[in-house]
Length: 129
Image 1: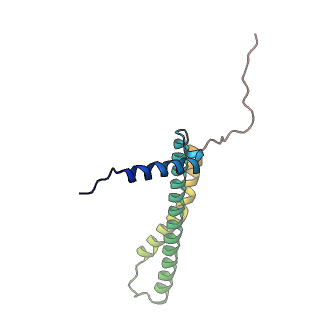
Image 2: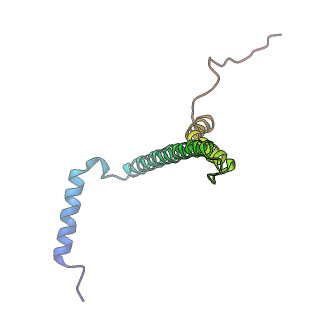
Image 3: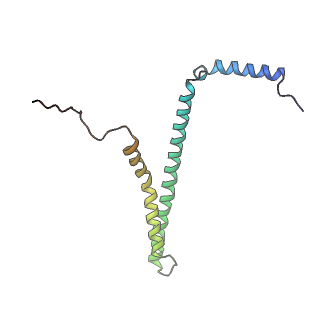
């Protein structure tokens, strides 16, 4: 069985730690860890949002196109085997998926954004007797 803690491995670990501290001075202290975690979380949330938008637009557009093509086929041949409920379902699901990113953005701005709806300065009312 091989030893893990050898002089060579200890020297290598010390060398790598000295190099890392000298190369990354802004991240070499403990106060930067929360900033790094916040940035990583922000990047992950943005990536999830982009993936969700892409999925909704691609699948929703495909469903709308399939609904249009199915409606055209049904118009040309009424016995084609496609019912109107499938066509209506494709239109409804496609429209929902196309509109979903807009609804999510509106809801997030409404509930979690720091912007206010009321404009103008708030004044304190005073009553004199």
